[in-house]
Image (cartoon, rainbow, N blue to C red; front, side, top):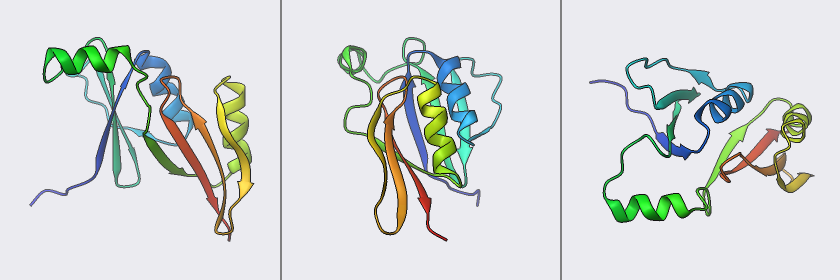
Length: 129
């Protein structure tokens, strides 16, 4: 039986920009050259599939209309572990991306929250050693 893994699909407006950002955050690319409007990434056992909001199909016209009027990421949070929260925070600031919660200690880890280019909220966590 083939392995099963959690896959998260994110529709994005600028596929190349989002792909580059997620690579810089430590995600690994799984090339799928036959699917030009998708980028497959992994982080541990979890897959993230980036799809071009204008080029990838929808289940129906109403769903497409609602997704495109956005905001794309409202209500969604992707939690990403990091070995260096300060470096990740610096990358976020360097990219000019919004921070929704400044770095803080929450007891079990240091965390911060930020929005990616499409408004998907990411929580970065660096566990205490």
